[in-house]
Picture 1 (cartoon, rainbow, N blue to C red):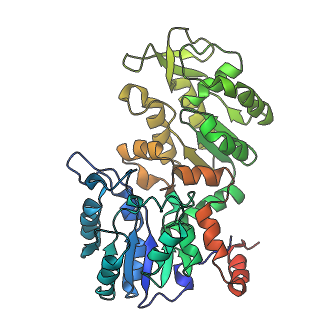
Picture 2: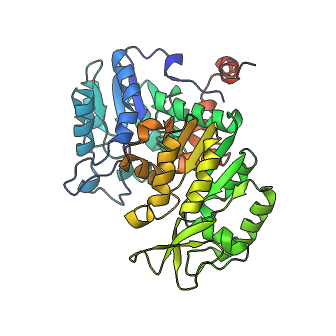
Amino acid sequence: MAFRTLKDIDMSHKRVLVRVDFNVPLDAKGRVADDTRIRAALPTINYLRSKKSIVILMTHLGRPEKVEDRFRLDAVAVRLSRLLKARVHKFDDVVGSDVEDAVGELSWGEVCLLENLRFYPEEERDDECFASELASLADIYVNDAFSVSHRAHASVHAITKLLPSVAGFQMQHEIETFDRVLHRPKRPFIAIMGGAKVSDKIEVLENLLAKVDALLIGGAMMFTFLKATGLEVGKSKVEPDKYALARRLLKKSHRKLILPIDCVVASSPNTRGSVVDATAIPKNVMGLDIGPKTVEVYRQILAEANTIVWNGPVGMFELARFAKGTNELAKAIAKLKAVKIVGGGDTIDAINKLDLASRFTHVSTGGGASLDFLAGKTLPGIRALEENVPRIKKAQLIRRFIPHP
C-alpha cells in the first residue's frame, strides 16, 4: 500500500480538515453513552494541535433523512471538549459562508466540529460540488475514519481529488494491523466468525479460508452450515439459499472450517435454554448459543494460536442466558499472549461489557470496513488516499510498506 500519513506532510500552521467517525450511541437524555470512537481520534487531533494547525472535524451521526435536532452534534462536542480539556467550537452547519467566516476567526491550535454531514444528501452521493465546498475550508485533508472508508462518500472519496490527503494515526493503525494479519500473520492463525448470516460474510469466509489455519464458526450462521450437512436444526435461523455455498466452503476448507459440536437451545429467546449435541437438536427449539463442549474445543484450538481475529458474537449475547459462549471465549482469548484482533460492533460491545478491551492487541473501530478488508477488498477511502500520492513520492512509500526480509 502506498499512501501518505500525518508525518509525511508539514502540518504546521495549516487548516486541516479531518474526517473522523463520531457516530456514537446517545442515551435517553441525548448524552454520549460510549465515547470509544471519539477517543480513537484523540492522537490525531492532539498531534495537529501540537503543530498549531486549525483542526476542522467532520463526521456523521445516525441516519437522518432530514435535519433533525436529535442528530445534531452538540453532545459530541461537549464530550470531545472534556476529553481534550480544551474548547471545541461547534458549528451549526457544514458548509456555506457562515462556516467559512467562523473557520476564519479561529486561532492556530483551535478545534472546531462541523454539523452532521448527513444533513446533506450530497454527502452519501459522493457529490463533487459538496466536496469542493468542504475543501474550501482547508489546506490539507486527513482521513482518520477507517470505519466509514468502505463507503465512497464525499467526505471520504471526492474530497481527496481536491486537497493533499493523508491517513490519520487511527486510520494508519487499522490499515497496517489488518494488512499485517492478512499477509504476514504469526502462525498458527485462527479466526472466529460469528453473527447471524452466512450471506453477510461470504467473501470474508472465502478469503480467510485461504489464509488461516483454522476458522471457528459460531452465531446463528452455524445452523445454516449444520443444516447443509444434513443435520436437524429445529426452528433455528437458517438461509436455505446458502446451503450449497456452505457445503462448498466445507469441502474447500479441507477441515479447517470447524463447526460447533453442541449448542444451547430454547423454544424461544424468552425462555430458558438447555444444552444439546449438534447432532440431536429437537424440531421444536432454536439454537441460540454454542454449548460448553464447543467452548472447550475452541479454547484448546485458540490456545495454540499466535494470531487471532474475531468478528461476530457466537450466540445471542445481548440476552444474558445466551451470552455464555461469547463471554467464555472472550475471557479465554484475553488471557492468551497471541496477537488478538477483534472487530464488529456486537463483538466489541461484548468485550466492553466484560471490561476486557485493554487485553486485546487491537480493537477495530471498523464494522463493515473491517469485514470488507478481511474479504480482500480495496476500500474506497484507502484507494482515494493512494491515488492522491504524487508519483515521485509513491515509490518511496511503497518501499516503506514492504517488510524487510
